[in-house]
Length: 395
Image (tube, rainbow, N blue to C red; front, side, top):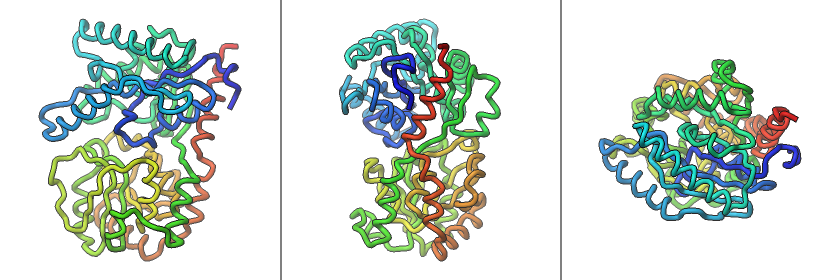
């Protein structure tokens, strides 16, 4: 990437879309910060949230509160050279009233400035993956602003869409670059941005490729999946209201009693939503172990719903799935049209199930799937952002 002194800033403050301590570390913002930390000090600010947790969420309410409190107790932590993670005390979404927002803004600004000084960051670029950070970005006097518009945030379940959209528009107006991972979303919003750039998700290609090759060579599988009979259809990722389609999945799994469905990831759906005997919930696994779980499956699936969020998405797991070499079956979203040569797309339960059966019987060309994503590493994506920032420089 261009030398950092030519980018016009001395470090990056990233308002992350997830929390380092309890979310999967394959997310776009975390991976990009990992790459930039090779040359610049990074302060990753754990998600300040787009909405407060609600008691109506049942058991998930307690889970959200507990894990956020545990994150807050960690404060500022240096997790590797040049990379600091910070959990500020704030209100999710920035507060409702003007008084609350003013207090949150001033408190968050002071905390982030303190943490940035401790991380050795001066003259920072500010990277935003959580829209409510729009309230505090100008007060940090950033040298550059990057807005990561990798999802249609206002379509996230439970948020105030008008409020999140207002943050979104402000960020587009103030940012030097707005990053898109969906061509459809970029085309729809290009006119709202000062400068828009398509840089989609990357993949730790060698890690996932190696897992796939090792599994084909008879390598050791994770212990909790090794006891599950084949054939196995795997899903790896969050099982959440804003992305997952429970009715479709349940009908598919119920039709296919001879196929074992392996679910690896945290779920925020109601307890007991699926009690089928051929569905196995293994829970969330550390990022370093994820490739092995994907590789241990015969086919990998993405049973998405039909929300605005999904129509504009481009999930990180798509390239991870392909890098393992396993066949992929997914419901439709706009970005998948660019990968129809290496995936099967089906919208209705019957067609989705038939695609799984075909993939198990005739897995196809694993090498072709890998080659499709081998040049999409996170290092390549970070370089593209650095070039875009350099070209947007006023010099």
